[in-house]
Amino acid sequence: MNWLLAGLAMLGGVCVGLQAAINGQLGKKIGSLEGAFVSFAVGTLALLLVMIFFGKGNVLSVMNLPRWQLTGGLLGAVYVVASVLAVPKIGVATTLMAVVSGQLLMSAIIDHYGLISGQQIPFDWKRALALVLMAAALYLFTKR
Image (tube, rainbow, N blue to C red):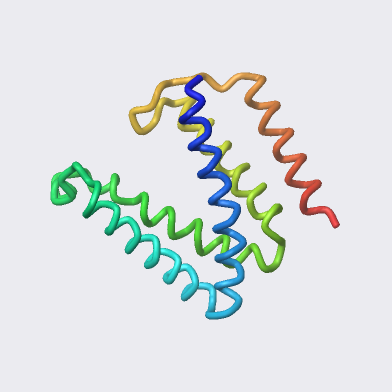
């Protein structure tokens, strides 16, 4: 395993946890959709600056991509709006438990069928058990 990449992924997870908490508070102050918009606007500006100074690709080649490859931003917006709405009502931990459960379910489907040019990894009893345990954990997180 490449520990540097695993550490980077873990840092991304830490950022998602912080992002959910911050965006939840932002949404309470200025409105859910407005909070999601501001969050994306700040992130877009930050990425624009990083791209200007460190980018090595050609952003204009986006015109030649299949349109479905542009849905990542839309899917990210759905996530941010969902977290802005959910965090103030069910908390950061429960929201992220639900997010991770959804991620694992969708990624297991993508792996099983080898979708989106991914490696095909069959769905087996171990993965099924992991998803059942994740559902049980989500239930326990939501139980008051």
